[in-house]
Image (spheres, rainbow, N blue to C red):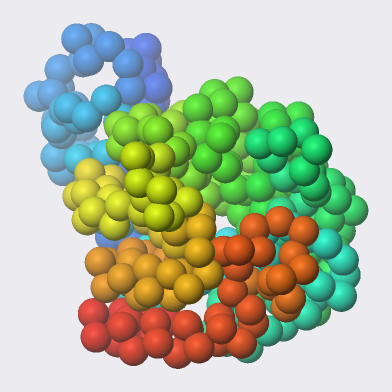
Length: 333
């Protein structure tokens, strides 16, 4: 749409597109509004749309992911969820334990990561684990403890949702719904998150291609939820020196292909505490819009992922170092 287009002109265009049997998705940027017309393109004429008042430019989107494509939305989207913001000049930092274990643990972590500069608190209440005998999380009791930590600190909550039936429950407590790597192609879950009134952090599956990740995001966007972030957390390769292989080339590649913000997870991407800070700094240097890091007051006794979790003190040191990297690439932390 033209920058001068009125709301009535926008509504008229949407009604016209829908009258042709197409789905109209309105994408609002800081400077431009785009209407994505999705469906059989043969029923619509480009020149006919160009003549509608308020329309500035019409183009065909060639990528299979229509709403996630930068062709459809040239500006990088800025996602806001409570205290957390990502996609602008400021780098969003999500930090906290792999699992919520107790009120004392989660509140102490929240206070420590906020003091160090984090803008959101992560913590798993529902934990999909490879072994059925591993700690599965505190479920709704864990969500209540996360809400307590938010009350104490003001930090937005980022927590995983593992089934479509739990989306409304988790969204009632959290500002950001995390879709874990194992669920990246759980299409019913993606659709349910597309209907949710919460931002979504979508993690790449350990063997997923970039197109598969972007098409998974498309499910959420197509459901009407425009607040989607992509998370690179490493892929499975032949290497054994790290838990996964963290490809930082994902950052510039995704930023060329999509308007969705890109977050890097150096904790899962490496699986070793001593590597996390280095990869967080490298991610910021590569242009990442955010990082998500596992932090625990006592990593040695954490119920899950202690081997890749920073102590609160180590996180504060990492943040000081990352702040200098951010300034060097004209970003803020």
